[in-house]
Image 1 (cartoon, helix red, strand yellow):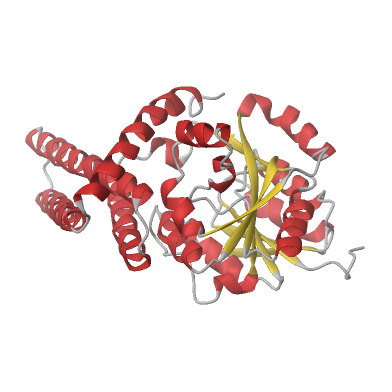
Image 2 (cartoon, rainbow, N blue to C red):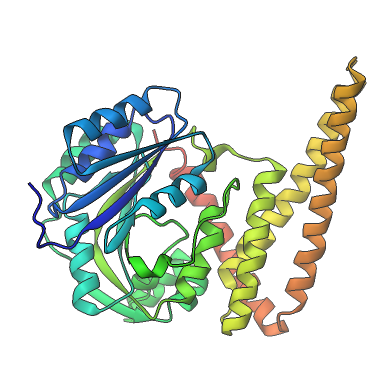
Length: 368
């Protein structure tokens, strides 16, 4: 039985071909110390048995609601969850991650007690070989509630506090810089429901979280941070974010970053993170578009016999190159709108972050 005196929290979980990991995630949500939950599993056209597993959970616990839809991507799935949510508060989880037993309890306490618009906590990255160990630890629940720190101007924090080394330095100097860090992901957060009024994820693109982050943070007044790990993020070498390298993938991030640069300019916020994302992905997009063009030419030269297929392929490559060129022109134009000092600050932070990313890619993304 749920305690209806507790606020209803809706937890949205997009599900796609995660049969090997889904039970770790859903079991960790069902075992939350905060019991009044609406758990929305959006089956996004799974083909590996995840659909049936979702239905089994719904049949076993009345708090679980399942939405089956044709495959449309994570943005469409998250939107379906938002449209169906009835809770006063909204949370998200990836379908292969594990929540600490006190995740919702502590995030809700931080949100309500401080009057913040969003609460967040720390997260831990782990590999597939650690699944059972992490699940067992998460089931015990955090032994201490963690210190709560409230900060204002979340858009500024999101844009500028993204280099780990500088956060550690700032915290060492007593500025509590680490508390102000959060990335584009929407997990390990608890939102007031009204924050999502009029905001939905773009559908059919890779960068749905990047495209939404600035919009959300721009309308928040303050955020509460809890200094305790409440979420466990599984690192899978076969995940999309670890393996996707197409020009279209980079284009989606460029498009999202360009819009975020506009939001920052209107809010008079230094767009350091968006600069980093924009410049990096524009560079990768140009390289990927040229590589795809070269590979297409090689394939056609090696004897493609279907003229219609060749024509369609050439048209697609031409479109890819055109989009890449347009993105490059827009990137140049947007960067010119920054002052010389702003460009210097953004470029310096990007250099630091690139060095950190090299270490991250080597140590974290290769977790097993």
